[in-house]
View 1: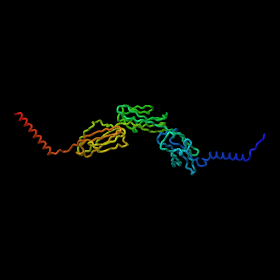
View 2: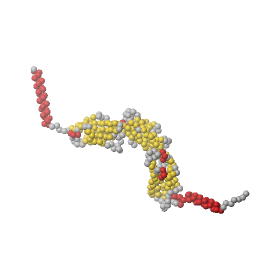
View 3: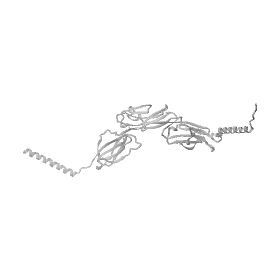
View 4: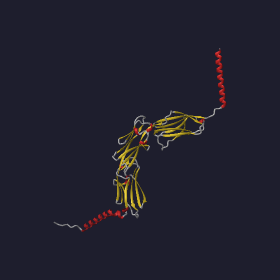
Amino acid sequence: MSIRFVPLRLIHQLLIRMENTLTFFLLATFLPYLTGDIHVEKIEIMPSGSPVWMLENEPFKIACEITMTVDDGSPQVHDITKNGFPIQQQGYTVTTTESVKDEKKILVHTVTKEATYMEDEGRYTCQAGVKDDIKIIKVFTVYTQDTNITSGEDASIRCDPEPSVEQLKVIWYKFDQPLEAIPGLLPRLKLSDANHTLTIKDATAADAGEYKCSIIFYEDTTIEQKFEKKAKMFGKPKILEEKSSVNGLKVMKNETLNLMCTVTGYPTPDVVWLKNGEIIKEQNIGEMMKAPFTLTHPIKNLSKSDMGEYSCSFENMMGRVTRSFVVDILGFEVNRGASVMMSDFSTLISCFGVFLFLLLKAA
């Protein structure tokens, strides 16, 4: 059996390779401390919790917050990845802000995108030196169903989140007001399918409006997340005063008259005021106003020219409704000369009638 000797040249090359490997290992392990990364105290991706839920088609936003001691300017290596690949290469925008608080430097890298899609689900990592934070992003969608109100019939709307997980809760509001705070609504209210379906029994025009479902993950915890979607009940305008369609108003001259109409309906109706069938004013219902809407048309220093029939007309895509007022102005003096002449003429006619009656009777 012969023994083959390894040339010294090959042994030398092997030792060099081992030295390079050891050097690389040492640098990878201790370089962050040598370059100042030891100053990183905390790193966190916001919002808190994991998984973090995102609503499809809504803006995408997360933020990586890095807290560190104020160092001597040594370079810091910050990296944000999605599923192991740099975030900037995947269609996201990253903006960075820097501030100092309590002698700590705060770096915030904000990752945004105009809209969230299912492909945005994944594993997001933010790394600074030897510290990192990892979040799992999950995307959900919400299917909504609107309805048109037919007076006296049940009306139902839906807010259906998918996937519907155990940590999720749905709460309904109308124009940001809790349903139980709306007079007369609670006894006619029915919620089903884990509150995903809202039904109002014997619906009326006053029930029309914009309803909001608040979708809550991890309710009443430090990692609570809230989202909102809208579902609508469309209804024809309805004037709420229980009065006749034509209202006679007798008002003294020189006074001020405020014509008033209160109406409900959704979408918010357009308003037109008319006098004797002619438009005198178009009135806007402000965006901040909530149904029922009360609008006024003041008429100051009343005179004869203000007499006539006034109307307030409300119209939306569901229909139109009108209320009218007949305005009569009192307090104007009657011409005295004309009054005396008419009185004398009436007396003469009466006397002639009596004379004619007696003459016919004698004959």
